[in-house]
Length: 155
Ligand SMILES: CC(C)(COP(=O)(O)OP(=O)(O)OC[C@H]1O[C@@H](n2cnc3c(N)ncnc32)[C@H](O)[C@@H]1OP(=O)(O)O)[C@@H](O)C(=O)NCCC(=O)NCCS
Image (cartoon, rainbow, N blue to C red; front, side, top):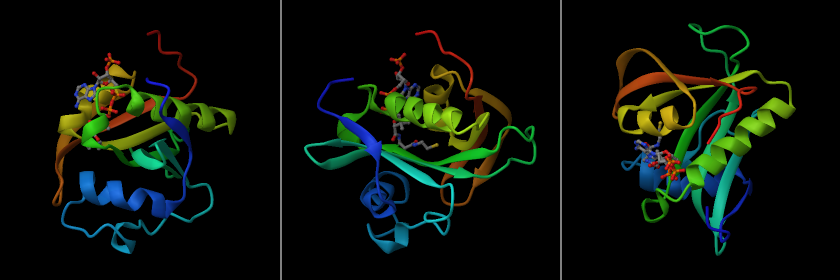
């Protein structure tokens, strides 16, 4: 990834513009883009900035998936890279940072509902793609993806 990106914690409101632009186009980029859990205990938001502008986001929250083991007890939501910045490794860097933080806090695994178009992204980063496809209202077909935090991905 080029050095001009700065990765770190961001505030929930710092995610709103990208959530609207990339993930939820029917929404205005404001409070409509807040998730009810955004400020809950244990929830954290990572972002990559270029010249101060947030161009990649991911939100991590405590949430156990009923079909996975109890150790997979965090969930990734609202992962997006600005269309001008895709394919440069910034999404990978955000996920690696998130997984590192989870591991450091004793969290063993993380899962997500992944859009079909993003399955290759998760698979290339060592996430398991599992189970059937399912429709998410307004968002299209998804599959369950998950990853342990203690696996080292050789790249
Ligand atoms: C999916 C998304 C977050 C990827 O972000 P990104 O910053 O472009 O990803 P990176 O550049 O870090 O890619 C990391 C790896 O995944 C691969 N990859 C990225 N997007 C991919 C895709 N859609 N399909 C297959 N592989 C993909 C890259 O080629 C790269 O592999 P490499 O390291 O072997 O070259 C971005 O395309 C996006 O925002 N898409 C629209 C919203 C979306 O679908 N979000 C996910 C919701 S579940």
